[in-house]
Length: 177
Image (cartoon, rainbow, N blue to C red; front, side):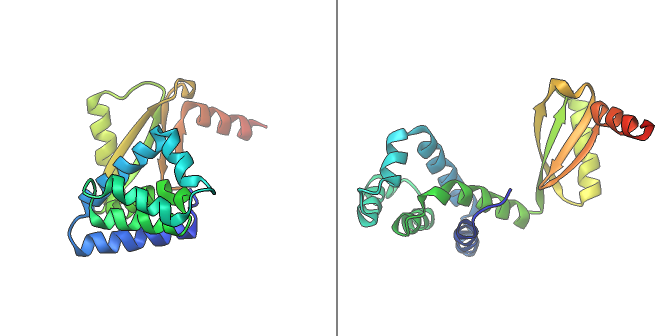
């Protein structure tokens, strides 16, 4: 997924600061909590995106409401985004920051798509195989897609590995043409 360069700069600066102060998890939680509130509150979204409210008023209200409820690092970064009129990148900053933390910890997220939910034994075998192949710890995110008929599709960052029955049948059809 492509992110705006501004989001990348905010996330990288926040990551470096949190890493230096040993508060990676606290900042990640602050960003997750704030984006959850932002996603669930139409009023907050409208307020932060309003052209009628000045940037300094947005920052003042934001600081009044959230000061003491999140780390100064997350608070100051979000306030800076608001001051610069960049509230639309807050969600991306949260995602990018989480990716940087995972990368720092040698963890890769893998999305798995199967026709039925994997039982525990299969789940552990897939995870162990991926960890051995990738030489990283794997954070598996599982999705059930009944249209797949069988097999598994993996998405690692922007790369998709398709071992589904439907994909194998499509490849066979193409060879027979």
